[in-house]
Image (cartoon, rainbow, N blue to C red):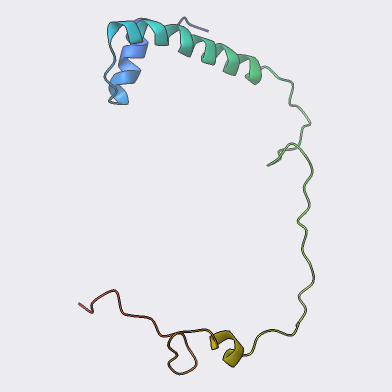
Length: 98
């Protein structure tokens, strides 16, 4: 793999519209070099026959069956409301119609 140069980092910083000082460019050459080496190592992993997956562990979605249960009536739900209008909560308008 070709060596990352200071000019490469300056070019990438320009593309990303990131202003970098000379010291930052010098430091980023080393840091980005380490990242690129790590990516190259991962790319060398033997992946033949490995199924693509979205998570490293097998996951199952836990759902309960849909079942009708007793719940609040409309009157009970609205019992503590300061104002009610046609079996609905009545709240002050916050947006004007325009």
